[in-house]
Image (cartoon, rainbow, N blue to C red; front, side, top):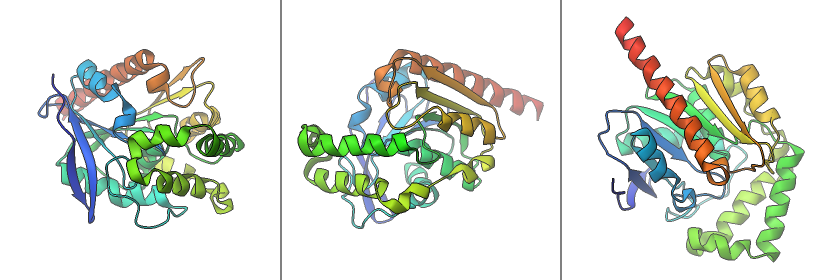
Length: 271
């Protein structure tokens, strides 16, 4: 299996970098990866390639505006920036990429975007959600983690590490991301109301030592979700289970997708 080169999608007047992994016509739903608040295609590392090989599904990854090799931000992030991504940008990305059957797999902010997209509008392309360290509401741990990241950016070399990924707009990307999360108006940000509208199975994965939130995030998700949820919680794991505990994360995802596809086949047989 060879990975494709990065490509460019034109979405709502913006150039977004994207990349495909695995066979483009696998006959299975496409796994659409939505990155974290400071992420991009490259920061998933080898996870997309391993995911495609393990599941037999095509994997599609893109960098949101402001990140990686996509166009830089052209306006400040607003408190509802994840709602804009979930309601407006993501549907347009799926259209532009020609994806008609998908499982959304989001990490951190990307998981929140997946929740908003699936819970606030009906999109029959979406078969399931895999949520890695999702945010449903702002916790003190979230803000503390972002303040530590800001200090690391200013004093401890995080800026140099991120410049490998976000290039010449790294400073702008970091300031806009940290600035909106630490804006007092953002403390009341909450997407719990989006969850009851989700109509597909969900897998939620989180590390016990997540530095940006507590297990209350996925426990509240489970309480509000009207559909089936599988939870996987890993010990000695922080905010990025796909990088910190990739084998267990991949195993959980593989099982979830296997069950999801079996259920889909059963439904088609019954009808």
